[in-house]
Amino acid sequence: MATTATTRMTTGMNVERAPLSRIAQALHDHQRFVLISHVRPDGDALGCTVGLALSLRAAGKEVAVWNEDGPLEKLAFLPGSELVTRPPAEPQEWEVVLALDTAAHERLGAACLAAIAGKPLWINIDHHVSNNGYGDLAHIAPEAPATGQIIYELICQARLPLDAAIAANLYAAISTDTGSFQYSNTTARTLEIAAALIHAGVEVGQISEKLYHTYPQRRLELLSALLNTLQITCEGRVACFSLTRETAQRLGTGPEDNEGLIDFIRGIDTVAIAIFFEEIGEGKARVSMRAKDPRYDVCAVCAEFGGGGHTLAAGARVSGEFATARQAVLDAACAAVHRIPLS
Image: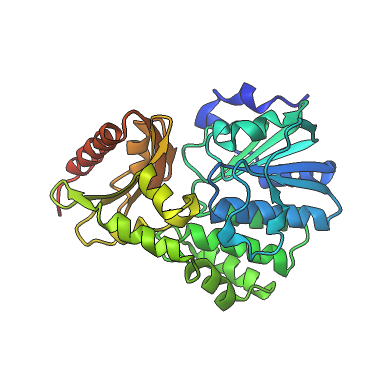
């Protein structure tokens, strides 16, 4: 009998990686699937989720796609984006739950978890090194630059359909998590997969225009406000933006409006670690952290505050008064850079 996800939360990273062939067999053996991804989803989370959902539907499966925060406005142009809904109020029974691109079980969202009834098979597919392997089948591949890349390999392994709509979602997933194929996590295999998706029907110019060069005016107004909060410390090696709730409410911005803005300070030539602080209420601050060099392991820094992610990109939610939480994280980041001598 399948165990529930919560009974596997203490297994840690020593969990054996389930081969994609075994997960592929599970996809063939079952008929009813619900796909979920983390709260405050990004392009990888929704792209890989919708891409796999479309492929399973094309194979004749019954599929639902849930996200606690619903769809992203900026990804509404992707085919199948309308499949993403908030979870239902009443619990539903499914044969299989596919948790994608979500390092921590609780990051799937309380409403999503409460909406799953019975004892379904839990499949956890992710690329975050901090994922502890929750679920019945866990395929955690930190070497993959995006969960979308793993899903492409799974679709091929399972010989599931791959059409232009599916390809567009997977391309968006991989592109957004590699900085449009600019980050160091981009591999030769990543570019081979991108080429295969283009062969499947992706229009690179059109999708890139929508992903990177189309945004509401409020995003530029947000950037202007954030630049006024710019703080550079630790001999120029740590920089941060800070977004208060008052500013977000005044500008009418949402979580997806600040996506990628941290790259403006990450690009400063002296900066080793860039940090985005966001006041999210309930005495908590959301922290996003980026590094240019793997010697500055921001996943380890965020882990000090209960967070995680990747070596070069990680995050956490820190309790406490906003200014106090911000200073604690800045001190930890400075300590991290001081451990690495200037070259």
